[in-house]
Image (cartoon, rainbow over all chains, first blue to last red; front, top):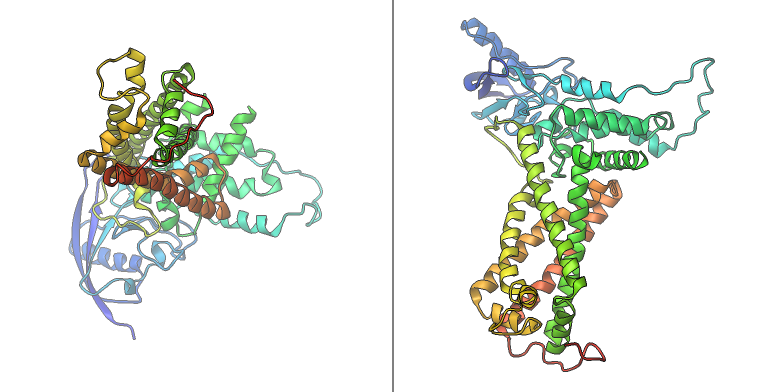
Length: 252
Length: 237
């Protein structure tokens, strides 16, 4: 049986990256517990607008857990306490208690400046991807589908790495503001496949250089990133990136 | 140079110096156990490690490793603080799989440094340093390591400080050992578990060796080191 909840939302308000920012609170009454958390925020915004106040700004897009756009730090956990492997949009009000105060904060990291409230600028991730460059593709007549044999294990692993949606939860959770889990997943998804090998060394070096340049921190293996990753990426990827990077630099 | 200007390079410096220091304390821990068995044998080792050129060279190398490890710890921490930004979260929750030691390596490192200073004051200053400068009038000779241990741990304050020090090193190593392998890239889904296990067992054994020596010299100073045999067939000093 669905039941209704009364909760207090304590949300972060901040006008741009230079603003100091502060918390505001809003009481939500009678929210059905099968409402998604983002829907509850929509309801809150309707109420704020009706009361003549400025609505709360947050990122969201597909709302089906695949785009990586939603990015809220809820009660001390990136994406909140969802079922394993889900983003904020897959967080439901049934995960909260009646009468609870829910604290909503933006990803806090120097690499992700706040645009407004809980909307942060994650274009740094796009710049890192861009630095990775191209993969060589032979044009001409299509090859036979099975011309390049790839062990199932490698294919699965590459697919798991590719499932990283670049939401930035790893950076948000990291006490060092390190983007290593993201970068390592994106390096791994290509490094594991024969098609990604020709540029593997170049890619690892360029993406790490870009990551450092954009001011992300140095990984100290605390594993906070893998604990909160909605796509269950693991630090085995980080070890692989270290390996790729060191090998590439040694070969120079 | 990529070792100094890339994040992975800087981490590699931490990793390699850390592993070298682990190997050193492994040697040191094994060496200490000799003191439990035979006074003469232990003092023979002390004489071999006195102010001989190779011992001084090794000590300088060791000091360099420690200094590099500390300098990079601070460089990395300062950079990481900057990357984290000034805005702190109002609410944070530590996930279960995040170990306490992994988030407090700098604090543990500072405690270890303070312990190291005490240790250098208790032993190195009275032994190698005394021998180098030719100090006179000390209670025991520079190669009489056995009696210096006895002297130090007869003081319960020192014994307690040493135990706190050992606990801090243990925490530091339980994270440090697998972390060093992870940084070198010698880890993965399977080896992560293995390194973690190896690291825990290794650090526990070494720290237990150190602890036994402290406790034995603290509580049974007259019973230790009584086996009478010479480690070397010839006399040193």
